Amino acid sequence: VPKGHQTQTRDRLIQSGAGLFAEKGFGGVSVRAICKHAGTSVNMIHHYFESKEGLLKAITEQFDSNTFATPMRLLSKPAGSPADFRSRMEMLFEETLDAYIEQRPLITVVLREQEDLAALQEFMKRFVEFLEQAKKKGFVRKELDCEMITGFFLDRIVNQVQFAPWVKRNYGSDLLGDLQYKQRWCKANLDLLVNGMVP
Amino acid sequence: VPKGHQTQTRDRLIQSGAGLFAEKGFGGVSVRAICKHAGTSVNMIHHYFESKEGLLKAITEQFDSNTFATPMRLLSKPAGSPADFRSRMEMLFEETLDAYIEQRPLITVVLREQEDLAALQEFMKRFVEFLEQAKKKGFVRKELDCEMITGFFLDRIVNQVQFAPWVKRNYGSDLLGDLQYKQRWCKANLDLLVNGMVP
Image (cartoon, rainbow over all chains, first blue to last red; front, top):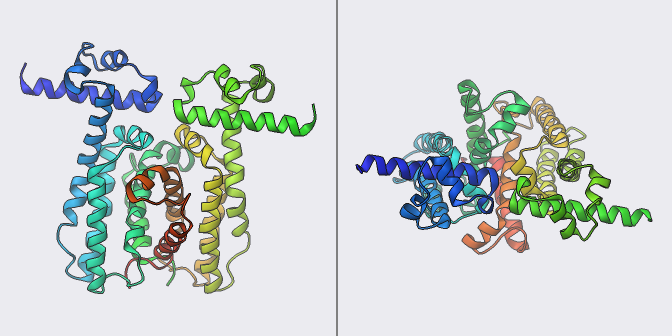
């Protein structure tokens, strides 16, 4: 079997597993049902993941590494100026949003199972350091409690992506299908985060 | 049967239904299992809610009306001064957090099913109006895109409450069990929201 084919089978099992777990919960789906959905023979879960638990772990790891690699890179160097700090926040917000959109099929199951996410943890740690460095240089308000607030923009992004169908139903637009809405949403939320509500 | 007893039975079915739906998904739980868990006879779901779908609707409505009544009240009058605006945001943040904490057993199932929430919708509409009024008086920055940002603090609160076990596992504290952490978390996130990141 050529390598490309193996990767495809493994990926199909991850996608099918994520979709079925999201729909019916981890306990409500059999190994047989996942393989049937992915169009593979029943021993393939065992071959690639050892067990259903192993498949859940692989889903979590794929979400974790694919989602936080770019955000992590954007914080690798300290901000050099107030303008650089602002533009780094902008890139961070938009790139993280796009990474979540791309990983959307996996989000529901990873969130529901509340699995540990090693890359997310590394990213959050790095984000706190980045803000502390920026604070020392005066690019960030000295009152900001960096440890307590790094999750704020992730919460906003993940909910907007996960609840896109609800947003669409209630407001007529969502981030996934409407570029103009997405741009306005990004600009408005980033503006609030950077500049706050009050003058 | 006295009225109090009826209310108790109905509430028990709502609590049992929410717990089981959260654990196994709506499709993975039978009417029989819910009644057994609640310690009622099997015709009680039919009596109070007509069907399992009716029970889900009751769970959603209870969450919706209990969670957003206080936040809605806090925005009933326009802010009278910059200080009043700040103190209203502070009360709104803390009261909404407490309402979510109180309704925590119902959150998972309501979020998962992405049901419509009429009281939430009313509250969001009112919040936009409140911000627009404050903007006219100069208490809110004129660049703020009020329609796009009212969900921000709800996203932060709901995730922190829903993922409290994850937060506890990864950071050693959470909002539910540690008053000092809760106060620091509220202060820091409110400060970010009102004043932003940059000087």
